Length: 348
Image (cartoon, rainbow, N blue to C red; front, side, top):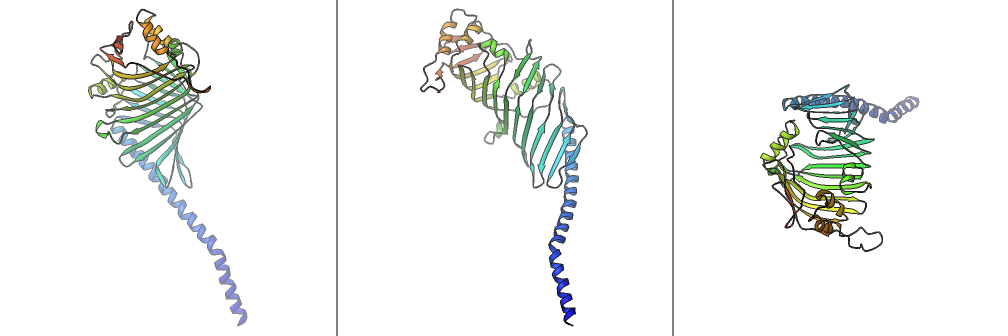
């Protein structure tokens, strides 16, 4: 009798010994089944989104698509990613998008080059060492988009008679709908480029030093992009009353610095129009170049070139506030002075 009781006690103790492992195995099996269900739903949701995009005129193509990421992530990999909307086509290299199963509205992506975007007339080609992006989605659409690239290099053809080439050390872009200006269909954008090499800028203002650029802007009337050529999209934006609100635009190139704030739009002749408030230092060569060193440019050049002594050995030179820069009827005017030898041409 005693031996039977001892045997039963031993069997029960062994049962509780193995119970945690059995429960863990059951949880693992249940989670594996759940992950494959989530994977299937993700694939269906992606196919549904692609179908909706196609109905809106945006044709996406994800070559060699795979969906992995077990056990806690959903990873979608495209060998190449292509987009066609109207006359606009865009293509990227290998693209990998990752979302956690418990946070599906936050997507982290790594995008490889090369990039090629064209509307049949203007073409942008790009390459980089590493590009990463994050997309925060909300039930009603995009909440925030951020992208960062190291060692970016871009070439633009078809926009100007000459090819535009630029490269840099790092590029960052942040984009979001403006919550307080939803009625104006406004988006906020912040762009920064570190140590950019822009040969065209070197020729314009002199010096071969790299340039640091920063821009914080708000663009209104952004809705309505249909993949038309750039000229047609700009015309749609102009007719809708779109504006470019420059909250801060700054550039630093060696001893040369400039900051600008203001608002721009397009006039009926498709030329930039508006007003900018400027502060600058060391840019006297810029005025000399654009005026051809003609009479009248000397005074403006002196204003741009003023460079009060900075306080402290490592302090940046102080900027000199300038009279407002007005863009009106194709002319540039600094306060009451029209800048000679400058005529703004239509953008399209």
